[in-house]
Length: 158
Image (cartoon, rainbow, N blue to C red; front, side, top):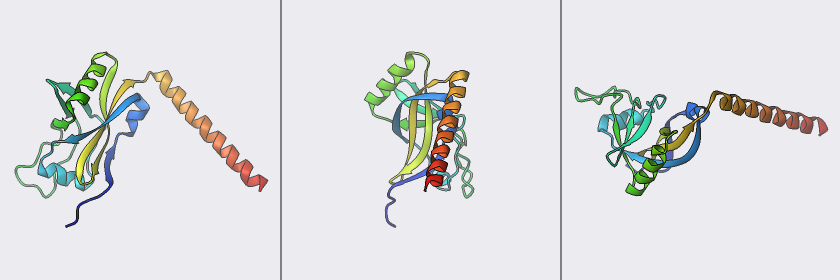
């Protein structure tokens, strides 16, 4: 069987970009069991409540829901267990320094396969205030209206 190439996105956390200011992103590997990999290959996962943290020099991903594999046996995995993240020591220290400053958190943005290996994109993020969210929504709507106006003007002019 040929090796997989490219990226296959399994799950994304679209709400994260709405709720947080993204400062920096990292790609991390995941330590998974066989049934978790098979469940992910079926495209089943949810990052909605997920978060990551550093504990004793190791990075962990918690509260990410990977449902049990349908064809699994009695030794299937627990859907919301904590999973170890594979990062370089320098990356872990950098993340730990930023998160310990206060106000910053480590959240998963997407879960995907890169060349056949399960990866998660992590972000160091700062929570948005309610007025920041409203302002971002207003800016997005204004840009959309401007693009529409330019588009109709271009079509009418031709």
